[in-house]
Length: 378
Image (cartoon, rainbow, N blue to C red; front, side, top):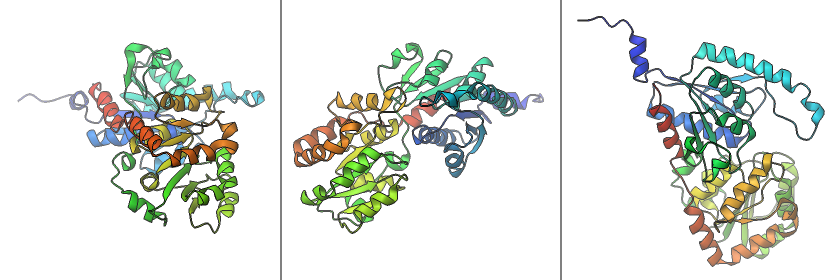
């Protein structure tokens, strides 16, 4: 019987003990897809080792460990569009981040690197590409970010949420997968009745869910706060996530109203989606993907200062397919509640929006992406 001398080589050829770095973050729109991909990789191949790399001081440094994964922070910052003077130290930070990445990759020895967007992904994937390590990109928005565009030229495969992305990336590298959505939402079995009872509201009334992201959306919040009487007048009730910024102000304004549930943050989004008959939301990529899956009539109020105005592009992709409505941020305080009221009075429009948005839903993006990556691991 021959002695097996290179057991590590055989393990590697079978994908046993494979190592993957997932880089990026900055917002929930980057972090939640990253976690969904990581969870699916582990589910499909439990022996795989995953290391996250993010930016020091950003939310991934808290959220990733909470999900049970190790993350290493690097000293990197994005380009500040509002104050050019704040960019003076950017070249030094970029150089420092590349030195840190070199050590991380040298020590961890990844078989592949996945970038999910955000400026912290750039030095990690760029260095990996220089070492001929396979790199994969996930672009969640309808308008690609600058880092991903630059990295796309040498990427092994680029996973995108929507069609038409060849204007940003090499067409032969594109794979339309949709955005990975948390399974608690994608596979939710929560009923409307259970959702309504969770928020202690009346299941006989139409319910509107208002979300503006974890920090909140001032234009949306001000519009809702100024027209709370209209909800009662039209026999509507409200589940209102104000976001953490100035939450106390809006919570105080809604105090005592039985038809309003209000809080700075909703952790049980599966309950909120189940309870909602319609939704008012920003148009971040993950919000859009989740709303397609839960099949709700939605009014988008895109954040106008998002890079490359990508939230407007996200929203218009659905609006052009008659799958959503849109109100500009600057117009929200004046017309948002009127548009909502008209929507809630029209069963025909609600049905049309629900049917069309459902056609855009993708529930297995995490599985498709994970399988593609594992297929190419040697």
